Length: 358
View (cartoon, rainbow, N blue to C red):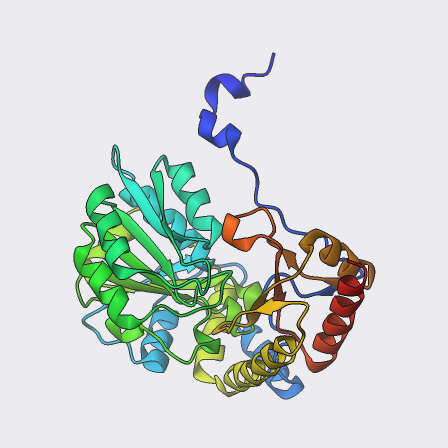
């Protein structure tokens, strides 16, 4: 008889593994990846830069070069600390592990980013959700503060813009929530390259407000680099559980290069913002769907039958994200990543086929 059930925690066995869809042979528009990488001349310089990495040595365990590049590019002052993670997912995991004291809880909006709940359950934290308005996915600050007072969360995650809804929560709301939070409030700005508003300057003000970012949505998902900006006391505590050498040497070198020569990924983000807005406008002219504004590189829409449309689009060679069944507010919803002009045209054509089949 297997010993697994006797020794692995039951909440782990009850959890469902995070599933990544098989996109072979399909136009992949389900994971908010950039449709292209650097232009050829930048790619050549990048490869030359990476050629200087010493394979036989451990990477810089503190990531000082990356931190300096982050401080210079994003104007992060010396009064704030920076924690590096193997993607923002590792930072989320570190946060839940560090704050999972007995009876500690996590509070986060719903619908929201699923990994917050995955990490909290893994760490043994209780999870409470802030319900978003089902019409526009806004957050009622008074109701949120009441929930904070009721649950006294050790950790609050707010994705801004929110995934999968794409909306931006007002800065003043986040400040109010941080002041009411007894523990740490983390604003997750994973989609910062595509948003017209940001909160990085709010990090450390108040001292329990932290801001998390990643290079994944800036066209560098393969690098797996995330960072947290916070009051140094929080960073010092988290450094005590960060695994040594968690950021590999190639990621560090590539990130330094990208942060010192950002024109290409900033231009890509600007193009994607324009394509997103055109996509929302075109979808808004189709009375068969409901579409919401977005501050991210994806668009959320509701269709008459999400499963049928999803399968119809897949049969046409386009993979998007079906959110139906994940939350009551997401009934019959699909999430479409903004791709290249050609990919977007294929996606719209496949969507039309799926809708006509309903």
